[in-house]
Length: 406
Image 1 (cartoon, rainbow, N blue to C red):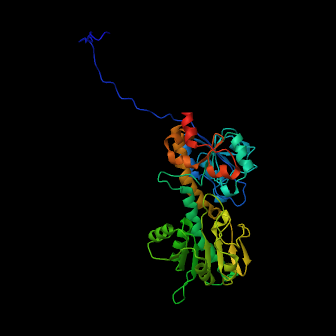
Image 2 (image 1 turned 45 degrees about the horizontal axis):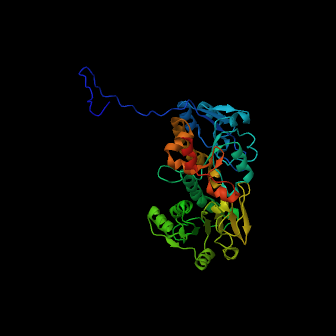
Image 3 (image 1 turned 90 degrees about the vertical axis):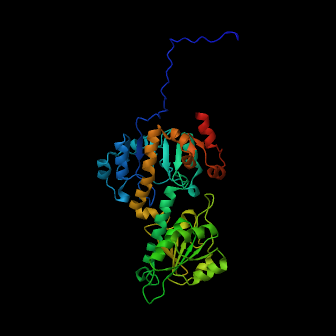
């Protein structure tokens, strides 16, 4: 059409507004979720409760449970069966699921069962992770999401927080048990009674574990003193608990002086960058503590913050050194497996429903940026910087990997 010509408008034309079309998400047909029976020592938790399984199966998903997987948390196979899960008596059948949900890290024994391209949601335990396991998962092009780094919409780590709340609350129950005369303790009641000075509790670390240990100790009537080098954490703890407490930065002379007269000492320091926890209580400080006092080192999962701490088990939880009772059981929440299982399940069940609604984890990662923080393997590519540095393996930026797939 030349510039001199005018457009022809015909009165017979019928102009109508077009209906707006909406972008409808593709729904997956079905998630096939496998729940193996954990063989790791002292792991009693199950990642999904029967109630959560019932919700998933009612939404069209399929759950395959290895027999006796819930026994450690006192859930029977019948509970799961009635909730809609299929009970598998063959391990291979569970590991053939598209998505594997575990309450313990992947072990060397399980590598042979894991199929290529599988999605795994489990703890990772960076401090004890082995290079061979990681490289085997990479070769099988696995996509893996870790409990420790999974974040919710508010930017918090919901599973880590729940496990820390359980561990912190349990610490005082454990300490009270070992202060008893029947366990070679001092024979004092944690908290005390009217007319008797309260027992003295020292907490090293003002994170979630320290906060809940302090809450429980104060509720029982104990005198609580908290040490941490992070002033913000100390302020946050006081605000959360709602009362003024004795707090201090970790100054060795002050800490040593307080430990000399305490009844219970709790190690609740968290490690930085996924490495070993810093040792802040020396052997000399422990040797000066009163005989019969109790040390509960919750940080033992990452090496411990007491120099005298050693890893113990639920079967043999304590040892004596310098007359002081040491409790060094890692994975304290596993001792309260039913509560811990419910807490994990409360986080994972809504996540699995979202994955199903979005048509798979890959599609969910595109929309949910906070979930990306938990991914340490994406289709075999390592996306966790700490694991990359520790094992000298190639690091891949997850955001670039996801963008390249669109």
